[in-house]
Amino acid sequence: MKILDADATTRSLPFDALINQMEALFASGLVAPDRYHHTMPMLGEQDATLLLMPAWTETLGCVKVVTATPGNSARKLPAIAGSVLVFDRATGAHLVLLDGAALTARRTAAASALGARYLAREDARHLLIIGAGKVAAQLADAFRAVRPIETLRVWDVFPAAAERLAEALREEGWDAQAVSDLQAAVPQADIISAATLATDPLLLGDWLVPGQHVDLIGAFTPSMREADDRALQRARLFVDTKFATMEAGELKAPLETGAIAQSDILGDLYALTQGTPARTGADEITLFKSVGNAVMDLAAAITATLEPEEGTHV
Image 1 (tube, rainbow, N blue to C red):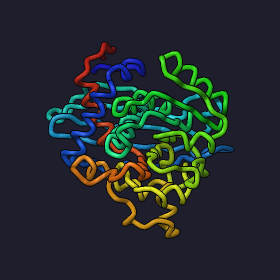
Image 2: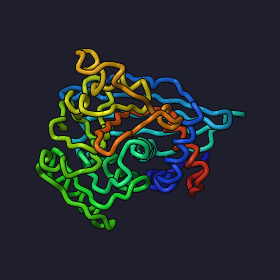
Image 3: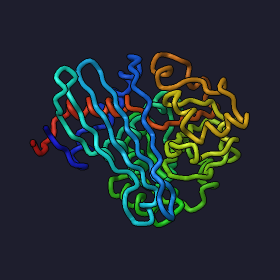
Image 4: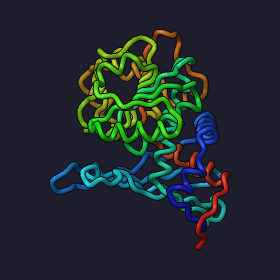
C-alpha cells in the first residue's frame, strides 16, 4: 500500500484535474451514503466532531475518517485531521493511504470552484476570502481554475492570521492584501468565500451587492453559521447536496424558522452538472452552500490514484 504524506497528497491533486473529476462524478449521478457524524464532547471548549465518509464506484472505493477540533485554534494546531483509505472494489485490496486533512482542504476548495463554474459571473476577478485556515489557503488557486481571479483580499477574526495568509499568497505572486474591515471589503468582491468555524454569522446580507457570488464552506453542523438570513433571502440558493439542508446551520435554522423555504433551494451539484439553470443574469446574487460529501472524497481518491506520487510502501 502506498502512503502519501500531506505534501505528496497535495501534489497528487491538481485543481484542474480534481474539479473535472468531481464534475464528472456528479454529472454521472453517482451517490454515496450520508456521512456518519458523531459529536465528541470536550471539556472547556467547543465540542469536537468525528466524521466517517465512504464512497465507491464499480472499480474503486474510499473511506475517510476525520476529526474536527475547533479548540485546536487556541493550541495553534490544525482543526482538521484525518486519513483517506483507497481500496480496489474487485478485491478489497488497500491501495493508497492519503493525508485526510490535505485531501479535505483540496476537495473542499475544488467543490467551491465547481459551484462557481456554474454560478459566478464569467468575468469574476476579485476574490474575498473570509478565514485564514487550511481550506482558505487553497481557495485562490481553486477559483483561478474556473475564473480569471486577479485580486485577493483576506479577512479573519484574527488579523495576524489574515496577514500571514496574505503574505504567503503574495509570495506565490498574487495581488493579495489582508483587510480589517469586512463590511467595507464585501461590496468590492466578485466572489466571497467563507471558510471558518464561526457559530454566529460573519457575513451580513445587507452588505451584498448585485452580481456577487457567495460561497459558504465552514458551517458543517447545525450550531454553526457564517451568513445571516438576509444573505440567503437575497440570493439564488444552491447546495452541494441535499444533505446540506439537514446538517448545516446555515440552512437548517432558517428553514425551521421560515426565513427561507425548501423551494428557495434551487439545486445541488447533481442538478447543476446535469443542466439545471444556474446564474440567469449578471446582476443576480448567487449563493452556494457546501458541507462536504463522500463523492468529493472519491473524486480526490481517483485523481490521486491517477496522479502517481512517490510514497512509502508497506
